[in-house]
Length: 430
Image (cartoon, rainbow, N blue to C red; front, side, top):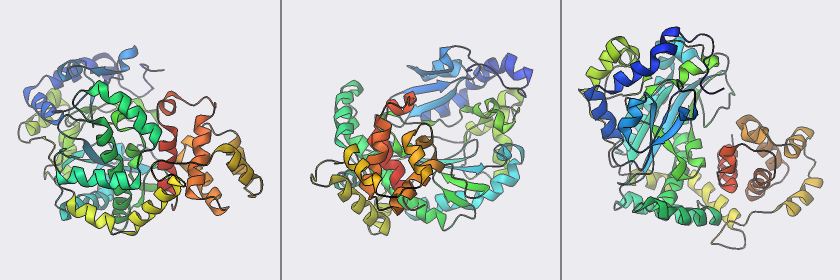
């Protein structure tokens, strides 16, 4: 139940955590850095595990109010100055999910080649970004001004690849009126186009990472690096990212981590050595004195990024060619919209396909397996091996998402075809 505490969380945090968190946020250097990082955000949200009511998660009109509630702080990627783009990398361990919180230095050292791969690729292409150390890894965040060549190039790529289906575009056009001067439709196309570019980045980082790299929780090895691209499988206006210098309380709430230490501070890397970063982010003495001092020394503005070099490389890669092929399959008879096969056509093909019983069982009762990466991959792989095309697999998963299988609210509020296309595209060759 929301608001209850699992065994292992210290009474000190149960009794005083909210007040301690609010005192941390009230310190001037922390407030300044958070205000820098959230500058331009269309919306702010917060989660507070210490709340026992519906304020566990809420939207705020004012970031100062969210700080006063002692929340974990998030800002929208939808931004008045231009859409934000982000890479989200983290460490995963199937046998010991909390490993990174108990053997922190050792685990982050293992993850360092993956982190350096992502950072170096961005630097090689001259892409300015903020590198943020999170609970289990790193975020790389940048802004794309709407008047920039990068914005126009991503919009062109997105239009050519038809990255959003017609029903999504129609819904976004309706919502755009709610956001004033923010062009939600074109921002969403830009965001989804960059999602395709992350497929290319996955392939590049994979060759430089010492840990097996996956795009979600697919534990083909006990330890993996996760480049979490699921960010780009949702509608843009529903995406948010943790702010710099936000507290990170989630780790203390999940029993699988078995962690009862202080909340962790999300801090910019800013050239600080790993050992020192780990001290800064978890030393809660005097309301995180080290983090406050660090906040007084750094800046957290999200920079404008020039992706020109990266986009040229992507568009001359086999990944882009694959995306073009997928796009053509989705359009079928009409080059201006997705034309997914519907259930009668798919059902007829299923009868003679010779699918394995496990796949048939999942398709018959898809909740929750078609929300779980391991089983999604199994179904996608099975359908592909039995002669189903990319568009047919997307159509199959979409029909299941649209059917009444008591799906949870997160899926109901998303565009089913968009989610199905994301999973099929990213798991097609894994």
